[in-house]
Image (cartoon, rainbow, N blue to C red; front, side, top):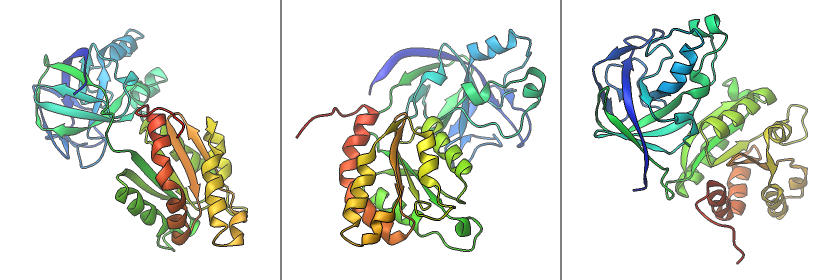
Length: 316
């Protein structure tokens, strides 16, 4: 275990009795695996079971006249001495017997809260982090919290997005996304999200940014929207969010697909990097998805481990 010397102190434990209401402080929280804090209306079997804020961020905000109390931002834990915003997804937090694992950095604010309307901003979308419960136990104010760096041999995480107007309207069953998920899981990946959205570039860009920046997944696969139709804009949307190009993967898919059909030359899929996330466009059919992954999946792992920092580049 690579436990860092970073230490903090829990200042408040907060829950809410009903969704849509502010959280309030409690003397202790019983943290349950697969749920979150017992009695918290926002708990559940998902990746955002527990929300955390750094005390100094709240104090800085209050110094500007916000006047908010613990729980007002919807946070479950307020901790002093730790800057959660600087910690990557996969970081583990230990307090008493409880172990939490950070799963998301920040969040998108869909409806502005009373704090935003009063102050013009809210720090939770920018400074808050979310975690899941790895080990059950109790946390009380005053308990120490220590930090464990992400495990270098943890499973690679992936997300799959299918682009389909008919699929998003419920007029067609998506088979491509589940096919990609099945192949990835057989290869040892943890597929954290499987999405089905229409061929809308802005929606795709928003999801790519969220998955790469907030969830910090290692790999995002898209399926569909790579042809010549005017609605096929997946490559353009992908390039708009890219930080670096990684063209060899898309080129390899086209080259190997040409062995199957000459029409593979019409595929416009791209492969790029955003931060530490690799994004690869795949064709829209389940058969093409399986073939494409079969061509490149064996070599992707090394590249993803380099991006993650758990492997070094080397020539054979």
